[in-house]
Image 1 (spheres, rainbow, N blue to C red):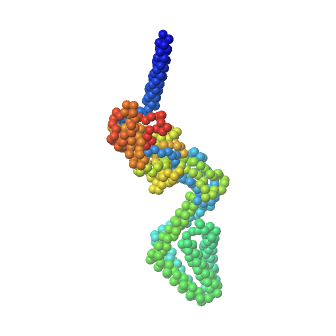
Image 2: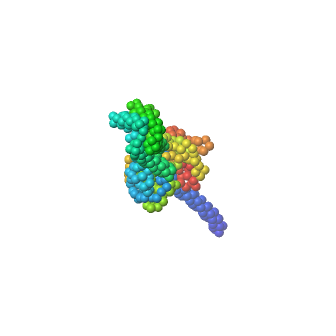
Length: 476
């Protein structure tokens, strides 16, 4: 009996041990199954997936920059002087041709007036010359010839006290004419020496000098006649004959009219007087600053009563009716741009009012920025738009549409990897609970999607596990 009990106890011990072992194995297996199920659940929950679909795709090139006015003028006086008036303030809107500031210019205004008078005199002399002698001029010349003949007759008969008195009066009159012309000539020469920039044309001085010399000779002849009349010198007859010859020459010249040389000299006198007037007016114009275009005054660097230099801008003017911006584009994207392409510009301060523009210029040479090759692209905004709200220096983003495709299979860029050595593109797809990479042929690439030409189809599921240390694929 005791032996039987011992046997049963031994069997139950082994059975209990077997049951315990079996239970442990079953528990471990169950635990592994639960862990595996949880891992599958977590893996599926961590997948980033998207079903491939057909759609349209647009490729763009974007860059940022700052708005700049289309034109900027740094206006400076071309001559030194004292500022007489500043007629604008910063922020004022001005029109083309409007006077913005001026220097004190009394001397320059006087020079213009004198040059205008000199031109009027030269034109009048030419007009008189070209008109030819009048009947009165010829009659006077004939009378002078008759008077010269009569004087010669008197000289042949001898001079008396009355003739001497007449000769003295003639001399006094001739000398007074000479004195006036001499004073006028000397004053003009003195003015030209003191003010060389306003000197009259040399032709004017030469003409005045010739008139002075002619008056001198007339006075000298009258003096000799007077001296001879006082002495009763027979030499008076010689002087009388000289007067006759002079009177004849003057009468003959009047009858023939002006020579070609005289006409040319008159034309040159007018031309030189006109040039002198133009120079005087140009100097006067340099004492004023005028707006070269419609714009807004950005800076005023001069004050009334203070000296104005010629080296720094007195006033800075901006044309705010048109804006432009220079942006930096990398060497890959710049190859897709061309002059004249339409551009959409979004100003940070006006995000809901995109502006239209165009590519105006692509820099022919590259610039290095942080070791990367870039090119400067100039974009010009169209005239239309809220120009009154734009300000120089505002930040803006430029977007250029470079390509478009329609109704193609689109895959998200985050699911695409490109082998950097071979250039082959791979798409990460989900098949059941498995993620595999398949080679694909790509087309146009946009910011978020890439065109798939072959290797994947509409309805395939792109998937990447977010549990990886790095995303599946580089999104390249």
